[in-house]
Image 1 (cartoon, rainbow, N blue to C red):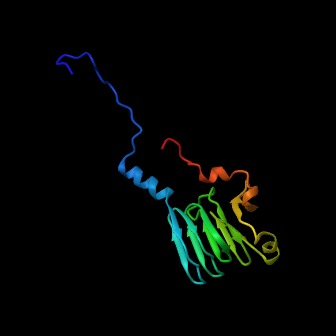
Image 2: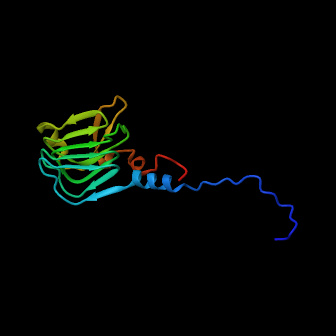
Image 3: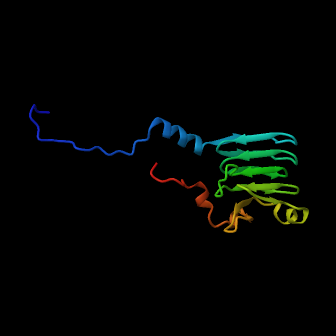
Length: 154
């Protein structure tokens, strides 16, 4: 540059994240992968999302702050959105005697219901009345919203 310049910068605007904000974002969007069987009496927890390749047996407990994805049978208790996240979902093959929890809502799977849903991959989410609704995953119209960032500008 020249010794004498008419260029004056009055303001700089940026979308750069701080290190603390980046660490927080990474932790919130982290998916804990787990390949195992959750047995009776075992508790598995995650501060973000969890992907389980395996099963949750009766008496086994899984608790996550965000979404829970189970590539296997769910016969135990699984709690997504345990810190009150009402947009959390649970995906899995729900069987008797599974107990599904999303935020503060609870739904149990009885033997009769299990006969109609146990053979398919299903999604559980809260409806407008905060009741846990279960649908076949391939029929769920809003699948993209599960994986979309809820907070823009990153």
